[in-house]
Length: 386
Image 1: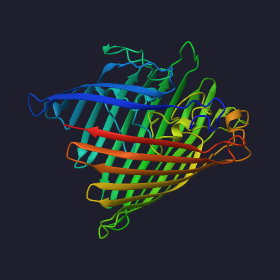
Image 2: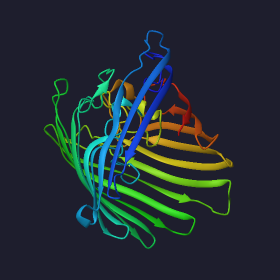
Image 3: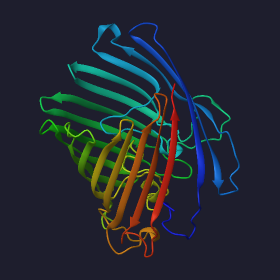
Image 4: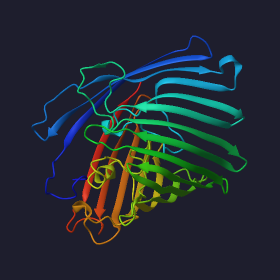
């Protein structure tokens, strides 16, 4: 019940998910690399019982050509369907959230200019339609990728400092209208990310960004960012990480004629939680993983239980930047979203077989409607790689 936080209209989803991928790479010389990856993902539903079994699609997950140092220039060019993650994935990670974890590709042209040793300027342009119709699909189920088509472009600088790293970016996203959603938006995002080594074992990371532009007839002014303080003690083999952090994503003020809510750009993915992304659906016009109007303080622990077994614990105290009256789902009395607990056990059975067991527990606060129920989410996964 992560979507509804209650029994009313709640549908019990239980299923097994199967994903298979085959990736092939060809390097005719040191400068050229051609990669193709095809993927299939289907689900067998235990409930609801009316879900019929379907083997689902076989689609092109990656298809790109990478040309390193063309003409001995200090840059690399990558063109085609490719995965792009910049920084920690705060603004660029997943090109199309509506297909879940099926794939995260961008249809893009990317260039990485090597300014100096460990100083890179990345530029990209991308286009993703609402459906996967740019490359052939076998056994198509007409998979939705986005609610509206999106075009993006950006530049991203990353450089190493003596005591850490600094990254800065400018990203543009244009969202086109559809027959069902006759609205457009144009967003410019300017941001910076920095990492500083305070000691050999302690580091501090922070990222912040400002958004301007327009959404339909409204102007935009939004803020987003996060920070985390990390301790990685080399002397304690059993303790891998202790992390304290915070998140701030602005919400819209209903009393102004501007749009102040943070737009997650190309980062609608389970960055902080696998289950909470579904809770965001009903307050964001049906958009899953739409990280916005969110504040949080959190604690993270990573432990080595054995040579091939790791345990992760996360606790988030979640809030909202703005109270949003008028939405029956979030019709509470305050801005306390609640408490989220995440426990994950990772294990490596062999060099080819690994897996995890994940449990998430969300206890709603007074931001939601009175009587909102606790939500539990469980996943067991096995992965076989050759």
